[in-house]
Length: 364
Image 1 (cartoon, rainbow, N blue to C red):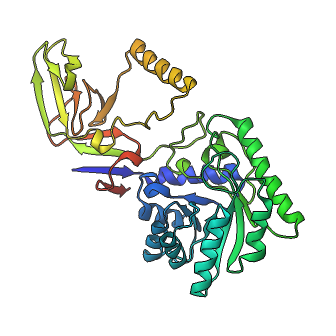
Image 2 (tube, one colour; image 1 turned 135 degrees about the vertical axis):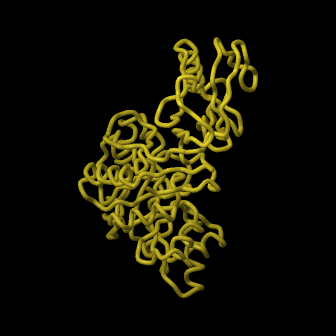
């Protein structure tokens, strides 16, 4: 049996660090992608116990699910601007706060809200460099038209999102200032931008951005940010599985696909039914082919080769070296010097986002 263990005390620690860093402004907890793989429902329940009253998700369906689970008083921000009628209907059904990132999205949402005889709270998104959703900073008149002509939309906030907060403080601060400039122009027009928020996890911790009216952390809640630095966060989410078999291999025996490893002496191995299909040894796809990125990937691989980088799992609390290639469904570990038997527990450090939703998430 496989289970992803999520330690509540680590999440609470991370939340304390977020609140301390942000100076106590409201926290909009980003729970996209099944709460970064940590389970949407259980995470939302824990955060509510800790006083969080604002959530953000990407998919309108997740807002509907949260309402169905009893999250009726919390504000739920949909992070995806959309002109799709089916998406909008779910946003209205959930009484969620919509993101407006274009004039077309505003028209579509206003039209369906008017048809239903309701008013919908919205946050206006400004594109400061991400290139996905958002008004260009130069589209001030289109932004103002949302206030002036979309009578069924109630603007309660304005925000942006950063493409490089995990590595460029200077660029990210410049983008934050663009948002503030747009908000200032809205005020000059006699209108109110509402709650301003920009700092995601990396923006808050790595870039030291001003907290504004709220912060919008996601990955830092689970303690797994992509930026460097020690911020007192604790990683949570470890995959556990029982050892399936233990056996001895003779000296010179090959292991795994490609025979990537050959035993140098008689070796006792543990066979664990966990592999890439369970999220182990997966990483974000290398989907950029800029020269600098290619060089960085190549240097990283060469460094691993030179240093003979090894990987380990914990079995009965002791480190066991992974031998050979990790398969789709299996990992083999060296337990020659470890007291180990079938049924013992092996623990893997994995990114919860890559663990299939079919694997139970157990909060402890």
